[in-house]
Amino acid sequence: MYDRGHRGVVAIACAGAFLVFLDATIVNIAFPDISASFAGADRAELSWVLDGYFVVIAALLVPAGGLADRFGHKRIFLLGVAGFTAASLLCALAPSLELLIGFRVLQGIGAALIAPTSLALVLDAFPPERRATGVGLWGAAAAAAAATGPTLGGALVELSDWRLVFLVNLPLGAAIVALGANRLRERPQRDSQLPDLPGALMLALGLALVTLAIVEGNEWGWTAASTLAAFAAAAVLLGAVVWRSTTHPRPIVEPALFAHRSFRIGNLGTLLFAAAFFSLILGNVVFLTSIWGYTVLQAGAATLPGPLLSTVFAGPAGRLADRFGHRAVIVPGTLFFAAGVMVLRSAGADPEWLGLWLPGACLTGIGIGLAFPTLGSAAVRDVPDERFATASAVNAAFRQVGAVLGTAILVAIVGDPVGLVEALSVADDAYLFAVIAALASGAIALVLKPAGEGATRTEEAGMLSPASASGYESSSP
Image: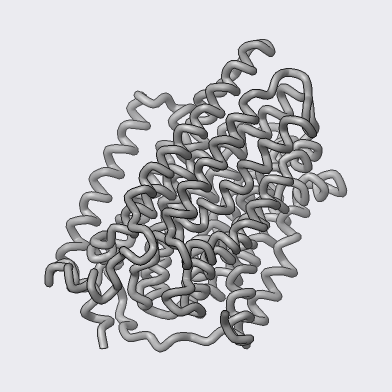
């Protein structure tokens, strides 16, 4: 499939992805313990320990990918891992909530550099006809992090306190930097000139404002002046980015990327499935702790089978997509996920883990392993090699916005129920949202061409107008 040198590259890149996705889940489990350490702070202020990380990642993913395509995937990847590891140490040592939030922002900057470049390094290691397999392996690493995070986080908090969930990043981060410096190779860069930096800044601010408005919508009110102002400012900034992308010689996101149908469909499907997936993660924890009365550690262990099966199925999903086409894998994956959520939705007030929760979790895990990484590989399927990091970053940004949107919708649906009957009712509504979002993602994937019918990269490039293709001119031979 790929030689020994490529195996090392893929292992290092996937370890970087594992590091980023581990912190997306492990800190959530430690949040109650963090709250107890800073008892004088209100919940809105404490929430920025989580939200600051997600807002910064969403804001910087695409600019980071554009910079990596210009200055090298290896260079930006190692810079991100080193910064992320240093910020993790600072988080563990933070003496105040304000400093902890600030260091989490630094972590988010490192994560924004790692996420697109780690996937770009994996794509670099595979020939075009095998890239879905590579994305499947990368997705398996992300799923393994999701599987590990809740259980590991709960165990570390039980062992000591929340500071251990940051210290656990240090040995892995140091190993990635040491091995990556020796084993990773930089592809020759055909264009090392700076991209549109004002456009990158406007894009970062626009994405940050969208994420901020979604994150704080429940707290501020969806029709509040502050929420509407954030959405309006984001619309202006993102509109300006679109305009600059059509006029600047080196835009941060080339318009030609969106000329690929698979890129458009893969990203929209990713956003919808991310909303379903992340609402389910939080919804499961809320259900198990508030209705079944599980501890955080028990809830983490109870949800473990799903992510484990996602890890198992993500790798084969890529090989199946390479052979039969992305649509043939994504659509069944969304159906498995929806079926599993409907099983979970049938749960009542009395705990029934073995006979009900376990089958539902297994079905959702299989669906996630099939659909999620395959949507990502569909998005980058027809992208030129020299734009892997940018395309991966755009897909990651869609995934991140979908995650924030799904979490915000889940919180809005759940609210603050009074009594068991109301809690079960809002849980039904929350699970129904996950089903609808997942099925919508599968319906969109039906538009993807089946295996053997897609245009080749050369043919699709030939269908572009000179204006839309000009984004690639600077990197052509």
